Amino acid sequence: MMKTVNASRITMNELVMPNETNPLGNLMGGQLLKWMDICSAIAAQKHSNRTVVTVAVDSVEFKSAIKLGEVVIIEGEVTRAFTTSMEVHMQVWAENLRTGSRRLCTTSFYTFVAVDADGNPVPVPQIQPETEYEKFQFEAAVERRKMRLEMAKKTEEAMLKR
Ligand SMILES: CC(C)(COP(=O)(O)OP(=O)(O)OC[C@H]1O[C@@H](n2cnc3c(N)ncnc32)[C@H](O)[C@@H]1OP(=O)(O)O)[C@@H](O)C(=O)NCCC(=O)NCCS
Image (cartoon, rainbow, N blue to C red; front, side, top):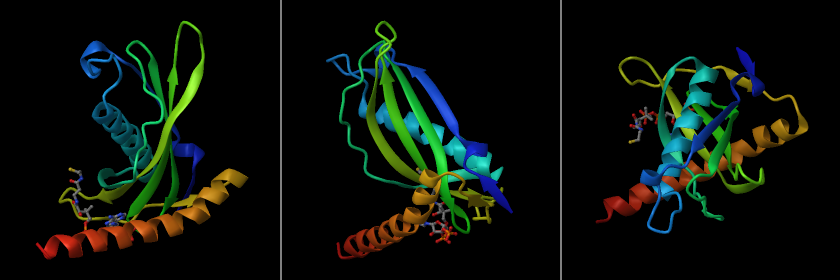
């Protein structure tokens, strides 16, 4: 079964509140990672119509602080599905509602695995990329997945040395 990227594309909006900021009045990194996890999990669940679990989170660089009272806009899309796993790409924007200006704050990829009621991985529908950009991300996802699996293997080997 094939599904388009568009069919599970998600836009999530969050208003930054005082209990989500540090003493400088900036959004805490961990809070943003949580919102990104929720946004990308919704996209993966919408694509697979299954419960999903987060299996990998790629690096996230916080390039621009997001201030108290700004709106965080997270756009998530499934770039590629493999057998039981799905890669979701996100772009995170901050919008100042008084000026209407919007800036890109970070991007990342999270990977999810679809599971059954016992937590066992189950197959997911494939992605049918449509636009040039979707086709580019679809192809590039193979190399990214390879790097993640290699990194996980190296980390495990290093842990076993302790
Ligand atoms: C995710 C989980 C179900 C995978 O189970 P598993 O028995 O290890 O299954 P597999 O080794 O067959 O891997 C399943 C898929 O995950 C992928 N995967 C595993 N580790 C990965 C990693 N580090 N990065 C990317 N993909 C990974 C595999 O490539 C495979 O994908 P595919 O079926 O599309 O080829 C299991 O590891 C788990 O439950 N982890 C905890 C998830 C969780 O609690 N997340 C919240 C964080 S606290």
